[in-house]
Image (cartoon, rainbow, N blue to C red; front, top):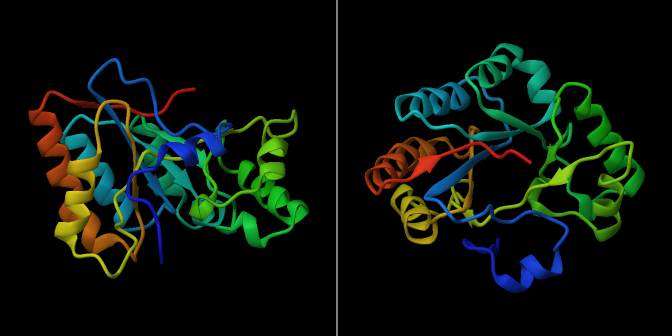
Length: 208
């Protein structure tokens, strides 16, 4: 499995339709969480964020919203943003345009948001074009830094180093509120929040 911990400039230019980073005039980091809501991981994240008075953006899978409605409502009630992450976590490169967009539409019934993140970051140019039309009107949000918490090969310490070394003002950072990532998330998220808060950073949700 190959991925960039920090997104290179050439990739940002290639997919210029997407948002990869937020304005960096202030010391603000934009935490994002993919693949929830999850019955254990998401409440943990919400508790840690509340402790640090931090806001974040949760890119939710439609079927998980249906399975965990109370957790989803807690995300919203505590002032965080949500985004569409398809209904079944589909890979746009391996899915027909029709099926992919129908899956996004299904998720849109339960996730009221103008934000969208493609699972795996894999989406075609034509699918991106469809996102912007009147039927969807979704803004694709990618990332600046991947924590790597989804990667079972990484130690929890390595995951923490990824975010401490690569994140900065305006960075969109990805964690996962999922079963697979939980061990690395539990270790790295609180320490990241403590470190950057001590450096004078704030954590905000994405608003477009």
